Each structure stands twice: as structure tokens, then as C-alpha cells.
Image (cartoon, rainbow, N blue to C red; front, side, top):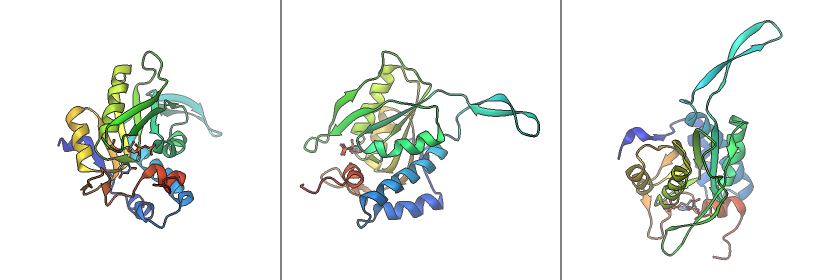
Length: 213
Ligand code: PRP
Ligand code: URA
């Protein structure tokens, strides 16, 4: 596994929030709040190497040269669990474009099924940040990266809250050029493809669904 492409946050604020996020007693409202807060912190780390360009501004005191983001950034939330990561990322990058991709994992085969994609013919951004709380088998992330590469995206980063070694392995093997930023790298997958210890189903926990399963 090329370790240089994987960044696991060690920030104390991330560790603290992650503990509450994982806790089975955390209700959807608090869960959504934590997804948002963790996304902000991970987004901050993921943007650390993005270029800036100088701009001339005037403060109330004098003129100065300040800086603004140089890259055209595309946020690509994977529906539906990635939706909860978008607002925080837009706070960090207010001019980012948001391109939703609809992928769900077939619970029997664990393979991704694409159901929504409105990308225009050619890429309109320089850097894509794929947003998805969970990287389990890596099937969904790998499929999303393939879609974005066909679109013409050159630089892609994957931002996850929790990753499994199996998912990291799959993505780094298929796409060694893609950097992965996550808050935690967990132990393994169980026989249903769920991350252990994980947090359960990220979509269900955000949106209060899954009670009929
Ligand atoms: C979850 C998660 C990822 C995918 C990860 O989505 O948000 O997209 O599973 O699993 P993988 O790495 O094995 O592909 P899910 O398919 O449950 O859809 P949802 O977001 O609509 O709940
Ligand atoms: N999707 C989730 O939401 N959770 C997992 O543990 C694996 C896939």
C-alpha cells in the first residue's frame, strides 16, 4: 500500500468528535452536526497543498497583497451519505462547484450501482474532492474516481471519515495518484462489508432510516 497517498488525521479535535460520532447512542441530529464538523476539519487538512495566487486588496489601513485559492475546486458528494459533508466544505471553499454522483452499494454483491450523474461533457474543475463518509470495500470510491477520470479530472482527492484497510488497498491499487484523507483507519470489514468497529450505516444514521431492516 503506497502510504504516501493516505493521510489519517491525528488532530485531537477529530479524535474527540469521532468518538461521539461512532457511539451507537448518538441521534441523527447530533450525528449530522458531527459529520459536518469533521468534514470541515478534514477539508482543512485536505486543502493544505492547494495553490494560491496573489490578489491586491485594501484594508481600512492600507493596500496589501493577499491570497486567494488558485484552483477551480469541484466537490463530488456520493449520494446519499456524502451529502452531509457538502455544507462544511462549501464554508471552506465558497466558490467550489458541487457535482453530485449517485452510487449505492448492492447489499448482496457489494458492487456499486450508479443512479445519478449530471456531469457536463468535459471537466470544469482542476481539483475534485470526492466526499463520502465511508470507504469500505472501495467499490464506490473506485467507481467514482473512474467516472471523474473519464470526465477529464486530473487531480482527485478522496475525503472519508472512516476507512477500512480493504478500501484503502483497493483505491490505492487502482488509482495510486489519488490522495486519501480520512479521520480514522479501522480494523477490517465484516462478512456483510461493514467497517469494524466503524459506525454502522452512515446514510441511515444521518437520515434516521434503516429502522425497517
Ligand atoms: C455507503 C457509503 C459509501 C459506500 C461504501 O453508501 O456511503 O458510498 O457505502 O462502501 P464500499 O466502499 O464498499 O463501496 P451506501 O451504498 O450505503 O448508500 P447510501 O449513502 O445511499 O446509504
Ligand atoms: N457503508 C456504510 O455506511 N458503513 C459501512 O460500514 C460500510 C459501508
